[in-house]
Image 1 (cartoon, rainbow over the protein chains, first blue to last red):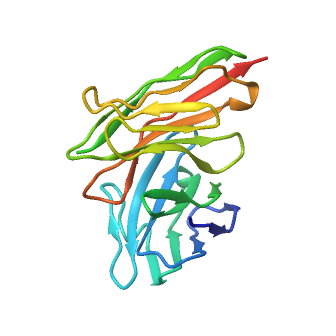
Image 2: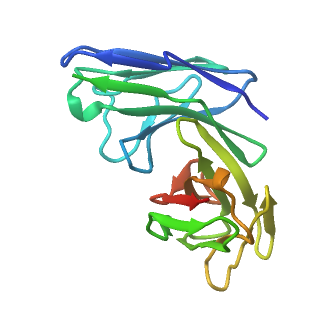
Length: 112
Length: 112
């Protein structure tokens, strides 16, 4: 199994600012994933982060808006840049272990 | 590409009623299938999974059978409780990728 923690758990930010979300896994994993869950919606994959290489972004998401770091096998960060109210969502970190996908508790972001 | 189609909600049932939430999928190869649950104010939790055709996943009285012939993974429970009120997500992971693709989610409310 994998236990995932995220920081911060929630934040309220001003338009135009940036927020960096941290994700820590209790074991070494190859791939880490960042998802977004907009209010009342399902989860949408933002990008896949492998250690030692550039993140792979899904259609509709770009590195300038959502830069990702993956410095080692247990840690990743997602930055939401130049925020607007439309970025208000829950952001979740995830990883897969033995055919099961685990999710962090999420970071609830509100942009005013 | 791979996709998941899920029964739209919200679904409201009385306690002890029988529950079915339909889920069908489109995928190449042999995906793994999952049901996740999100209780009010909580993070996403894996409810059950099935990794090959005819497998039955079960947990907490919920069941789902991987039907390749109908490309379905319907969630069932014989007698629901108020504590089952949550949002349920059907999901798949394709055989050639590690990312999870989610359905739109079904909000379930159980009346006492």
